[in-house]
Structure formats: C-alpha cells, structure tokens
Image (tube, rainbow, N blue to C red):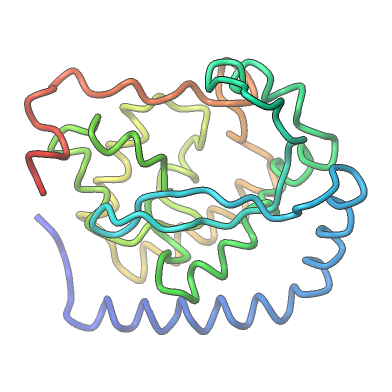
Amino acid sequence: MKRLHSAYSPVKRLLDVVSAAVLLVVLSPLLLVVAVAIALSMGTPVIFRQARPGLGGRVFTMYKFRTMRSAPMGATLEQLQRTDADRTTQVGRFLRSTSMDELPELVNVLLGQMSVVGPRPLLPEYLEKYNQEQARRHDVRPGITGWAQVNGRNAISWDERLKMDVWYVDNRSLILDARILLLTISTVLGGRGTDSPSGDTPEPFSGSSDESNDWNERV
C-alpha cells in the first residue's frame, strides 16, 4: 500500500526544481571542464541523448555526458554490447565511476521529466517485458539516483533491482529521499556497484517469467 501524504508530491517537485537549478549554476565550471575533456578525447557531441520511459511510461529524451567513442556504422545491438568496454575511454570510465556522466540529467529534472530521487529510467523496449508488479516503477518520475542505486547499483540482479524500485514507490517519503541522497554520496565516493558482475555493461533485461502480467495489460 502506498504511503503518500498530500503535501509530498508538490514539496518534492519544488525541492527538485530548486536543487537542480542551484546545482546547475554551482557546478557550471565543472560541467564546462567535463565538456572540454570529452570533446578533446572523443570529439563531439559531448552530450549523449537517449529515449527513456518516465512517469506513466511516457518516453522522453534523457541527457548524459558521453562516455564512449562513436559506434561503427551499421553495428547491431549485440555488436555494440560486445564493444562497449573497448569504446569507453579513460575519461568515460572516470565519469562513470564518479557518476559525473549523470549531471546533465539535472536538465531533465528542471523539465519535469525526472526527479532527483526515483527509480532509474531504463530502456523503452523493457516496457513490454515488465510484469504487472514491475511496471509499477513507472508510477513515479524516474530519478538520477534511487533506492536500487544505493543498494548495489549495477552489481545486483534485475529481479532485485526492480523489486527495490517498486519498494521505493510504495514507501517514498521526503525522509527516505534524504536518506537515499546521503547514501548516494557514500556510494559514489566509494565507487561501489558501477559495474555489473560480468563486466562494464549490465546484461539487458530479458523479461519476467510471469508473461501474463505485462505492461500492455496495465495501459
């Protein structure tokens, strides 16, 4: 059962807007340095854009700092996944290990597409693979950081990760959000969970074993 207070959503949105705006201003010198480093090591563009589903499964364009060299023309998804580690530059690895590649998502927060705290936005093709319970992760705005990110990040299984996302949806509060932010600082500083057990790139989500309760039956 959801534990929601009438003031939670508007207060959280206000805090999101204020914190994102302040961070973008305060971190602007760092953002510029990172952009220059990416341009020098990988060329342009410095921003990686990708479609991700947000609140209610509505797709938006998410912004991140680029961490990999451009893929060969005509490469398949399987080929891209095999070459992810090779295409990731030293600058890119540093940005990932420190989570600085996520900083442009503050723009998504200002636009109302994301929150500072919430389930991480995954790929649109996963929508049809969720069972009914897993699909509830889209009952809230996705976040730059979330409960799964401070409890294993990419080092945990998809089943555990999605269960944590739904747990956050049911237990979200300003106190929990503050706890996640504090744990995020510790996680980032410790560099924990940035990689999956099998390598730099997590295995794609293959879907739930309960195929009768997918996203299409919810919408």
